[in-house]
Image 1 (cartoon, rainbow over the protein chains, first blue to last red):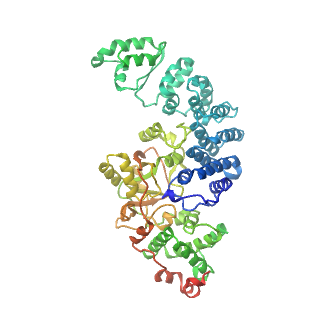
Image 2 (cartoon, rainbow over the protein chains, first blue to last red):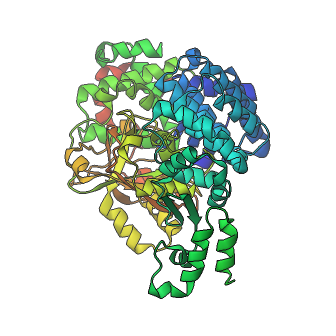
Image 3 (cartoon, each protein chain N blue to C red):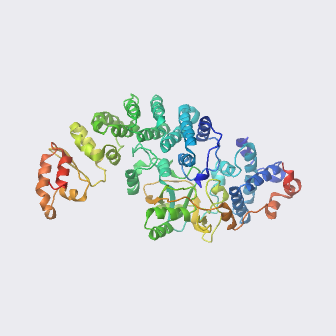
Length: 290
Length: 319
């Protein structure tokens, strides 16, 4: 049924701009009969998917024009949230610069919950284009903006980490500073962080963090349900082991018992070599039977 | 004009100069199959007294006025436009029933994430799919502290949500081992014609304490609006019935309710990706209705008033 929806064939990108800004600002949707049980950006994506290639580009450009024209007072935060999500669903990467400028501009205003939620959608969209050209500088400017909304700091940190996973320790101090202002938050970001930088990079660069930062990250990762990530904290320091295969998990279990005895010595050697050794190399060697 | 016209909604039709407008609106609806389906559902509401007489009469006038005022608007879309301005008055109207069983809502993953997930706390990227890791977290259960305030509700872009029996979804799960075949079957049996190929569906199962307090209603043409495929029906159990997109017969039970807050006790489960587009025709949906619309029926015409018949009908006098 969605495929029957289409733009007026006479519409230009400026018509698309007007349509979206009017609709999302509480006005009339000029395209009638869009499905009411899906989010508005999903309905726009359905129109886009059903259009011819040339018309798709008109929708993309029109959406970006709408973003450029968006103003908080005139159109409201719901509008920019919807527009950003459409950009994401259409993969309109040309919007990266506009998205970045909106974040910076809004950080100069007073923070409201509505604004924070809307900027969250903008950042999530920007993050989705990583590591495309322009994403990392935009996220960096927002993250290090003197009026950065701390509620958005986890998103910005993980977005930056996704652009350059090896550099995540460089941004850790800023993230933890911002997080202190919203201390009870971000206790469930572990899986998103691991998705952005991979467990291997987390471990390989973990020693670049200060001891305090390491412990803070252990806290943040403590709610990560992945049984593949083994975290131990002792007087010797923090140890992270990533064992994505079930047999490695047995191998690396803190207290290997009889059934895994053939691996016990290797496990012991591995644990003793932490954190100096390259854990992933060791794990790979053990997995391949060396 | 459309906004100010709402103030006149209670004005009696008989004394209003809106009769020609009303019949023009109905005529415009008759020009498309989707419009005739809406008229079919309107006729159902009238003949089953699903809505109070005065509400129906005044609403129809308001629809007509709004449609005429907004040049170019499709006539069926004014229904939700007008109704959603005063949802407590027009949407999810009584009689309410207790569900009497577990309830589930079926929705695509992107819509669920858009409406209900706080990316500040679950900082995944927003792209044209929902990352598997995020779906994993959602399925494990979203902690209450991440669900925000009372504005985080289950709803579509209109102020209502559609539900079905959890048990029938469970039954379909048993019948279809392939998740994508399951998703396609759920889409078809629930008449979710707005889900095309590749949409990934989720089941949001309501917690039992929520179900106990939930007031649901069999949907009317106002709840259906122009944005979903819907055929009005009130089964003996008090629920409505979806349109089965394959057979055009009654599908699974369906009902609507006002938005409710999403809590940590809701259980979200993946269903699968819809494999192919729906195959149905509005004509067949109308044919199998209890009160299919073919032309202006005499009882509805009488309801609209003798004045209407004498002054405006036949159609030729309306333009």
